[in-house]
Length: 233
Length: 255
Image (cartoon, rainbow over all chains, first blue to last red; front, side, top):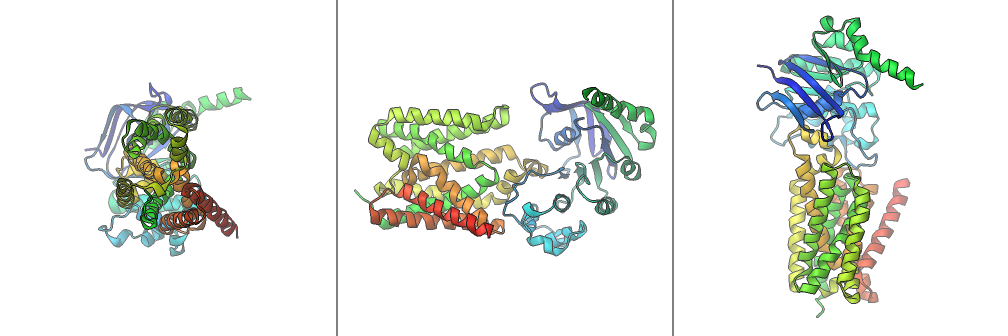
């Protein structure tokens, strides 16, 4: 049984779900899959994630495995810079006292490549790359079955990117984790994803990267936007 | 009949502690201005209470509840900017309240007078403060996360919209409880200023929450004693103390 199954999903903001919306999305994910969601800016990738999380209403079918635990790493969180919360306190918002100490704040920080000195740092004072690692650590704490990454490495430096993907890979092997990540980097898609979903307001393609990422499909996905871009100038 | 100073101090401190805690979460949610203006909604409720001879606390709380429901609904069900609505509805409420009450009543409703505390007022202040503090402690994690990032809260199964509504209700209760103390006009500042001061000084959430509550109590006690000594109204004196503390904290932060 798939861990996540979408049939003719339509989601978005506003009355008819057209604002920043997506429609006609149908795909399924099995345990251990890595799905890359690609598409131009404003194509509805984040909206799709929000619909899966349940934070915006949808039409059509959205079936999640019973008792599924979803981890979510947002692209960024809109923090006030002077918020007086330490990384440790932030991570502890996620931890229930009864939970194992395999995922203590110090240990999850280590998993994302941050030292213990980060425990006492204020999260508002971290760089965006550091904050993103904290967000990844936060998601890992909950032992998720499905991990949604909104552009996981958008603000992590190149040396860091390697580690983040390796980390994801390792987690996937250890916990048969299912990953869904938004990425603009096609080399990442080829290297790590076994399924790819192309999105531009509607679903353009879905399948294994080697099958569906043909020059024609990519032209269809990104080509339109480029033309529009030229017209504007 | 004047209540003894001790009762006044106890009730004022309880309200200030609860207000400080609520304020520290309100600032995470960037609702400093909304919170400040929200307290004005209490005025017509107080006026009705005085007019129809029921406890103004009940009237204030009912109107505040209506106020937070409007904020909540506008935020989640429409695309209207909350700030504009606050500007219109809340000042409207202030005007309605002003028409309903007599001059003297308005002054008391606007600026409060905790020295005229009845036994029932005292009990209400203590009970509502205790209720607010326990809810904030119980919901600490859920509130923090919801105020910081509703998306993250949702991803772990919290219901951010409901938590926001609960928080706003607590906020309304805190304002209603403080009406007697600082009045409808200044109660927002009793909630916001100690938290804003604490945020300048705190290095962690834990110290932030404690400090907000502690500063609220400290400023309230100072305010009440100074007001008593100089024969002034405690509400405005409290706010002036709170303001001084705030500017000192800005200076300390810059250092």
